[in-house]
Length: 485
Image 1 (tube, rainbow, N blue to C red):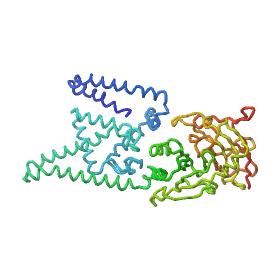
Image 2 (image 1 turned 180 degrees about the vertical axis):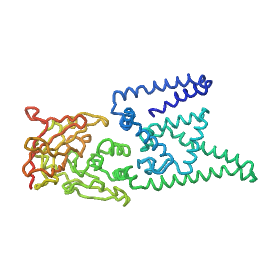
Image 3 (image 1 turned 90 degrees about the vertical axis):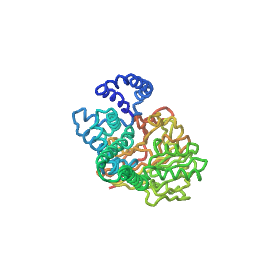
Image 4 (image 1 turned 135 degrees about the vertical axis):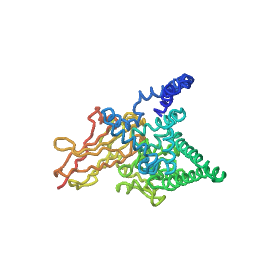
């Protein structure tokens, strides 16, 4: 879309070179049209200039363009060659399984023949404006793929969708005209001569239709990988909640609890009328407003053994047995243990936004090379003070860190993660976060200090720790970890 407009000025240049009369008739209306289009899109360019983070895909171009700038054309040649072969040659097609059978070319073998023939015909007849325009349309439309390669070209080549399928038609009609010329002098009955082109077209379209139907509606659409890519488990979960959900907040565990993925799918499919909390229960759990709640957990995120003690299974819904995520279970979360911990006096107050109430090492005997797990129990007090609102989702996005310090006070082992993301927090929520911290094999036996803090993911700025007399730091000490021989 960023380059499709180039088709028109390039075609004007072609007309000025090859068809002067046509150029004189068309240059002014085309120029006026481009200026009007430019005026319409100017606000978008102003917005993008002021908010460059919105251009999330430009990074894909940077590497190749930098190589070109340094004089290395090899990546461009390799990507361009692969992008062109993706139309006709098995193994070179779009590798992104969410769009395509990985490696399948755009065309079946018969359509590929007509596509190549049509491309050659257009090149041969380039002095005719109609053929030149098809070449320009196709070339400009696939320009992004020529730079970045064939992966995800199913969407990147959309600007060339029409000429991509016009080219096989040109090849077919050229072949039919050639065949008519060859058979015109033959002794075959005229009825046979007339029936031959539509018969060839019918065979071609039936073969292409059969191939496309088999590949995309049987093989691709039923693939466990594709069902997983299109979040089939989540879709079924949301349908289940529509019939069995509670008016109270429901907790959903997922591999992608951040705002830009699974919650966005939920908003699209079910709206925001049903309150939800999002976590990855493998390492975190949340009690909405500190209360016991319904919780849905898919097979892909089995709960941590500590959390499993608080979960009462009520119903398991099975999907296809060969699915990568073949089931989900409806649990009832008993939040009484979380409530008991949260009733303790706070260990630390982070910016009056969230308080730490309980800290515990889940393993008492840890040796070098093993993993220590630190349990942190938090209460959300004011989510608006957790951190700045940051793009691209325009929510808070903070990370909890846990560090083990050596005698010099330098971190030698740590974990930075938050599996109950802050964008979803509400005042009164209770959060249990587990930080698994691998212990380096060379660590000597002894007792090691540990600290915990919170920082904004984008800027790295830490949340201040407050006391009655003001800010006392940007982390809090927690119980030390004893490492054995």
